[in-house]
Image: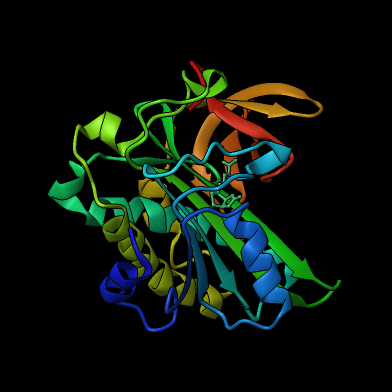
Length: 268
Ligand code: BTN
């Protein structure tokens, strides 16, 4: 993966048109944050072969060895309200899932799913994580950083995630080129992002997202701070909340961040 290869493959108008490539970096999210503060344009993309301080959600780290995965962060300056920004994570999750499907045979055509709100999974294990961060005032977004880690050719995972993580190489046996997938994800994202920003909701993406939603119409465990409960996962709302029907028939809107939702048999 090189900047020149990425530049030549990128078939987008603005997303990933200004690529900053690192052989090794602390975290692409941190680099994009700095570029955001310095006024870099929307669509600026940081890509690294290796991260020394990769960051995951909920303060976790993200294992980021060289030569095997995609680590990238995209700078966005959407004209939406700050409380709408979390929906961008769902837009990116859908773009990654579609990008993987677009790679077709070279990727082994795995029928990947989205574990709401934003993990990409295959057969019960995680292939990709997304970390969205924002700089904003009460009423105005300065910029949003969407950071994506995709396990492409990784075969060794740290002990803590061995049972829950996998890679495209492990699930398909194929050696997919990282730059090909990266370019497909950004092509998908550019289209879906524009649909999202113009509607200021996920209304145009809802059906496509639900077609990839793991556990749709199945029983799920909702792990909320107030206690765990079970219900049937019905789909998502236009604002990104997950709709789960309780045994008494009531439909709850589950908001990302506060809770974790799993199938009843494990991580996904
Ligand atoms: C998760 O915990 O599921 C989110 C992981 C996000 C990892 C990516 S890798 C590229 C970008 N830079 C980071 O430091 N984190 C994100």
